[in-house]
Image (tube, rainbow, N blue to C red):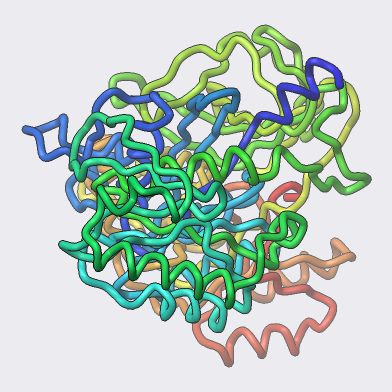
Length: 530
């Protein structure tokens, strides 16, 4: 095994998915805490700024207590390097989440022990299934009274059609919750319950017959634990690593992230079982992670991560090769060669210069408007990575500045936000107003807030009579021109200059499609080929 293969083998790039409020951000913090990336967890109820979660760094997120942007965190644990992508749980921001899932090799699904599988969890799970992604399940909040663990396992199995096998098993629940027994290693690491920002080592008990078990736990808890585990071993299939990698089986970890229970076991499980970086599809071939030449794909652009600098960072996942700072990479879409002087590594909003990176790593490239979502950077070959889609918006509104003299500034702000992929922005052929399209209505509030704070342009959104938008394509340029001319009042261009048809209602959309059968109306567009 070469040195490069060795490093790549120890990379684990994963995302955390869940319904809002299942405890995703708290789990993210605790993984960082156990990985030694932060010394003090943000969830500790300290004063002011220290209390904010590290991964929710946007002003909007801190005010509302929800995650709306994906953040990237890199940390080491034992011999492994983890790249953790925290995603928005709120469904109105699902597109950002969808794109983030294209940049990871596995996912951790967080489920609230009392609520079970919720709508958004199921939606995100379907996205993972499309990509045959291995999933580890973490059942959280066992420090509160919840449903019976067998019940929750059954729901995961039935609703998501996955084979389940418990990796750990809870001892009690709510006030009686004492920890989790590790079934994979047949041991129990008993930790003091602590909301603590720091972590203790805990007492190790090996096997169910260890006399320490009876000494440390109340008698009823030990009896129940032994009965439960006998039942689990009789009923649940054994863990099959291949079946997990193919996305058919999920190992289930129980715990309470806020009290540090079950987090170390989850980290160990990811280190031992989660896949190292996998091969990635391009339009011509699959790229293997241990190829010598560097390739990477831009899956996200984030503007103004640091309000003190008007910065835009393009997030790139390295798909192959050994990247070193100062390397020259070809920007395949434009054909230009970029000299990458100051790539960055992330811990949410904090960053440091990345000296080197290998397949599976996520690095940030300062972007002056030339990089777009879906772009491929390559050391030699002209490749084009696929699988990063853009969705047609479900909600359309007009954007107007409160001060008419700031219309030009607003146009610039909207253009940047569109390049980031946070919204679609259309310039109608007729009329001066910009039309902004989003996947969920809460995005309008977040956009208005961001344009006000980051670009200093107070803006308001006004309802339109528009129903939906579709990208339009035709083989014959003359036909395309005829279509655009006969629908002048309903067409426009998006921020990439691609033609768009904006329909007033379903009938209008169907009529346009009937009148021009040769024209394609697209609901999703492959970002790489845009």
